[in-house]
Each structure stands twice: as C-alpha cells, then as structure tokens.
Length: 548
Image (cartoon, rainbow, N blue to C red; front, side, top):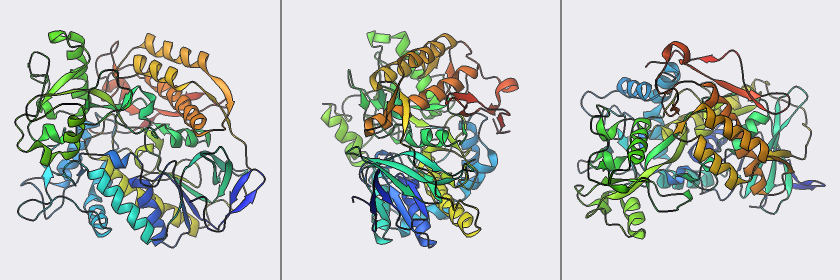
C-alpha cells in the first residue's frame, strides 16, 4: 500500500490523518498481535512496516514457543518450573513478577493464536508435539513445520490482520516520534523507500520493531534488524535497560567469509540428541555445565568461543554439531536440512560446521508489565522492549511467547489510556530528522571486534573512540541512513552500559572481570540520552531482586 485510506498530501510529504488512534511500528509477532488486538477493542489502527508485512524477525524463528499447557505437559512440569528455568537463565537480573505474569499467560496466548489459524505440529497421539531446548528442564517447546515455527506464526497473524482489516503501510521506516509541548507522543515521522518524508499522527504508538543483530558482522537476524525502534524511543526520551546483554546463538551455520544473516541451526537439534564437537571430535561441552549441550546459550556460546581460541585440529573459527544420530533429520528439521544442502553438507552423514552469531537483544526499551514506557503515549512489545522476562540471558523459545503476550497487553494498555483521556490531544510539530551516523561496515567491524562475546575495558574504550571519530551528522534521506543512524546510537548506548558493568554475567562476558559479582552488580543499568544526545547511565539504577 502507498498509504492508509483517506491519506492526504502535505508539502513535506504524505501527512496521513485518517483518524488513526494507534500506530503500530513493526510486523512481527508482537506488532501483528498488538494491531489485531487493538482492532478488536475498537481502535482505528495503522501498522507501519519497513519492508513487506510478511518480513520480520519472527519469520526466521525456527525452534518454537516455550509454554506449559495444563492438558499437555511432561509429568511434573509446571508453569512454576518454566518460571524457575527462566530465572536461572536470566542470571539474577530477571524481574520475577514479570516472569511469572508473562509465562502464566502463555497457555491462553497459544490458544488464541491457534484460534487465529496457527497450525502446530502434533504427535502420534494427537497432542501438540513438544521438544526441549537449552536451559529447559522439560519438553515444553511446541513447534510448527518441524523447524519453521516463526514462519507459520507470521503467516497466521498476517492472514488474521487482513481479516480484521488492519490498515498496513508497507515499505516505510519510522524515523522519529512526534512529541507535543509536554513530551507526550503524537505520532511518528516516516520515510518511504523513495526518500519521501511523511507524518503519521496518532495519540498512541506501539513499537514492535524487533532486535539489533545488524550491529555485528554475522547474525541470525534479517537485514532489517537495525535497532530502529530502540533508537526512536531513546530520542523520544524513553529509558532503556539491560542493553549490554546481547545473546549470541551458539549454532549458526558456518560459511567461510560469510557476512550478514547466516542460517540458524535451531537449538532443538541439540534437544533431540546432537552433540557439539571440535575438529578432533572431542565434545565441546564435556565438564562445562550440568546440562551439557543443553546449557543456557551464554554458557554454550562462551564454551565454543574458548574452544575455538584453543584451535584444536587447526580449526579456529568454528566447531561442529554432530547430528548424525538423529533419525530422519530432513523430516524433523526441513529448514536446517535445506540450508545444509545448499552448503553441500549432509547432516545424516557428517557433522554440521557451526559458530556463534549475534541473535537476541535481552534488553531494550524499559516497559511496565503492560507495555507502557516512560513516555506518555509510547508503548513497546517484543524484542525491542525490556519487560524483565529475559534478564541477562534469554531462555530459549521465550521470545515468541513474550511477543504474543506483550503485544496484546500493549494494545490493551493503549486502549485503556485513550479511554481515560490520558494521552495527548495536541498536534505535535514535525521535525525534519537529522542524526549522527557511522558507516555500517566500519561500525560492524568495530562492534564485532570489541563488543561481541568477549569484552574488556580497553577494547570497549577503543570502540567508543572509534565510533566517535567516525561519526558524521547527516540528514536522513534514505532508509539506509535511518538504519545506520539507529545502529550508531544503539551501539554507543550498548558500549556505555557494557563498559560500566565490570563483571561477567549472562550474555555479557568481560575477560578482564571473568566472575559474576552479585554483591556489586545484581541490578539492571538504565540508559537514556543526555541533553546533547549522548547515551548516559541514569540514576538510580533499576534494582530487580531477581532470582539467581
């Protein structure tokens, strides 16, 4: 679509004033869920997406949705055990109340998703098929298409949005929040793929823009994962937390010299018996953790990184995943099998070369359990948000669950606030956006070298200086400019938080401070922007009291 129904043109570009009450930015599981739920509540909604409505991080999610359904679960498994596993993976920085609340809403969210048309795999007995992934103490991860869960959820939600007649604005990136005199949101500024600026006015905005994997040279994320929503929220005055915790997935298909999005080898492969080995065939996870190959992702990624540094057998940039013992691998994991086939690998006969890659942002825009941010009229859900569910490291397959639950909650919060008259009624001023940006290749090389799995004070300081010296102010006239400006701001905010946290915890590994320090660091750091636009740590820090 070129614009919502009833759009009119202004001198600065299309100024869409079709009576929207809510703008949803992002078309993944959280964004589509928010848009549909808001429509069900009677709100007039416009969903803005950077590419097509079918393209998002959600589409590429392989593993599944972690959920304990009362009628279909392992003996002894429970919502409480799922909560406990999540708190353990979060390494002391989860918000226990948020964890309990979001996970408790999981079964109902899955029931609603199935009613919206999502089809999950079933076992021979007719129940939903379940697998186990890293950090889980039971088989509770439901999946679709073997290893194409995200694609199925995306399909179902896109069709449901069409049935609900959600207005969708494709190929537009949200650049900036419109703010009234009191700092409340009044809409967003957008840019289309022809460089035309437009204004989309509404008293409520839900950010559901996904992650920031493109900060790094190799990632499991698609090209659109450039931190746009996080940057927009910071510029609007919102707070962010836990930005230093970027989870690296342990097993992305290794291809020499690869850059950008690389195929994921889902954790469920290890859940069904595959073993990580080095070039000599020695197990990577032997003696590292009690859960072995199903240890939390930060543990496995760090172990792989250490083993690569030791370079057994002369291989120093990847290890191997031996899945030769899994019967009918192509039938159970058709997506992974197809990627392997393209790379000339037969998983039934030879181990799969794998290496860690940037995967999931555990932190993001700080929200309440309802999805509200510190800016009136601005809400966030999904990977862009920091709800307290993930803490210092995400438990596998909790992300789709969070998107389903929090997408609906953010829409409900916006509807409540609108009905109560708590949102802005002013017409916010349009500002032609300008920002500092660093060329993407330069930024990715710096972040990969100094701010990936292993970090230290000298490297983080060098990275901050390199980015500062490479920045240039620019008018944001292309989508690429918007993305590079977002990556630049998010990288600087991440470096600020990572440099301050002088310990190793979860997905934040400091080689100069290799131990966890609960006495000094068992709290989340909050980041905002100073008056000059530079990222700064805010006081007081956000104490969580999370379980170890």
